Length: 286
Image 1 (cartoon, one colour):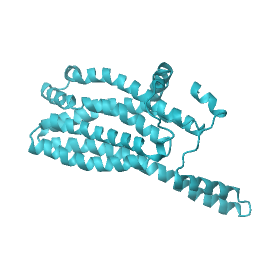
Image 2 (tube, rainbow, N blue to C red; image 1 turned 90 degrees about the vertical axis):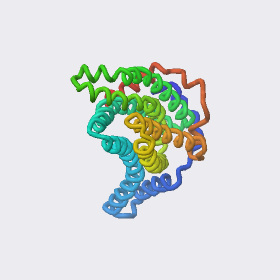
Image 3 (tube, rainbow, N blue to C red; image 1 turned 90 degrees about the horizontal axis):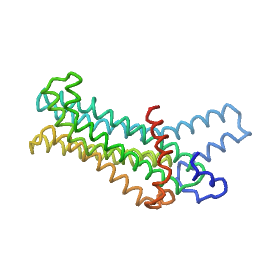
Image 4 (cartoon, helix red, strand yellow; image 1 turned 180 degrees about the vertical axis):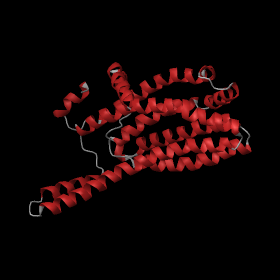
């Protein structure tokens, strides 16, 4: 356990209020403790309430990942309308190179979910913001070697046996995805920070609105402005940054995060080696 959590058994912060979620949890406890009701009725009521709680948390989270995947699909489909070569290049860039960065960043960002969950349960709410910043620092640093891989993706693809025409076109597409790497580095810690507090719906709404803008902007870039593969990739990167900025604004302005986000702190730079070990372990497990 992180050293900052050891004081949590003594020091208690005010409990953030999460409305209906807390009400359902309290109702679940009342149902289970109501010995006047038959056990079958208690079990049935508890299962219904537990299912409601799970769906309330899981459905928006699933929607976020599906919508994020849909953005890549939109980019790939519209790029495919330019020709078979462009379709092959976008497919290779999306499923061959981008997915590696996505998986690595998602895995490393999952360390935030582990530590933030512990801190939230121990009521050390200020530590959630610290863990968010630590993870962002580490993932931003990880983005640098990933950027090098993106820059040299053409010789890598040629080494793997891809035809030169496809490797060249895929490299153009991948160059436009470089800003997306750093968006991943900011996005996944933010998502896990919010999920640890059972805040999942805002990310789903933000992603839904963003994918609509993404469809329009990609169409304009590819068909009206003639930016081609590079333009489609740049718009995809831009869309991810829109999601990041919108989520960050939510954290800064929402009353639900006022106890867990207290601003930037130099403390975020402490304990980075141990945090890195946990992040790498999370990435390997994923």
